[in-house]
Length: 142
Length: 63
Image (cartoon, rainbow over all chains, first blue to last red):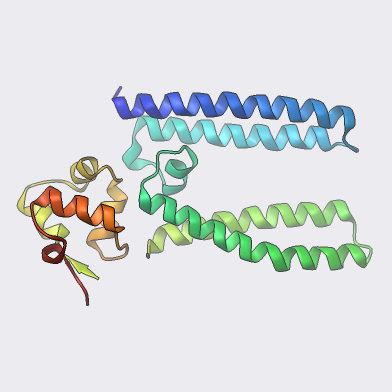
């Protein structure tokens, strides 16, 4: 195993442990004090993110040249282009989130189910993040 | 911005991956640089110039 791969794994294990602590603590607090199924939802969402993170670390450590820009950025080993792609994708999500939140607020005010609106908003923004990351990585423009 | 990275790399018999390793960037970044789809930061431009033993102006040209 190369030194770079060892550094990647060491950093990733640290990040994984820290994230796991946040996940467990947050889940316990939300199960105890949160409304409805918020604790369960937090646990499932957090666990999914950790699984994606672990998969990305495995791909980056195994063969960095085949990993995607997102995987390198997500695991903290991206170069300047990877960081720029992530910044562009984040900027798109930020821009879209403002009108999307407004539309969601209007929908709730018009008596749409808040649970459904929040779910659509969350998954919609995740979809925007994925599409904008792929688009920015393909264009790679500066 | 155009650049001479592909020519310089091929003259030295390097692959994109090995040049990427030397410059501490990914193979995809080297490819994006060569095709002109990504303009490097000033520090990376200096690193590239030093690696090839040339000046930035000898490698990068404004269209």
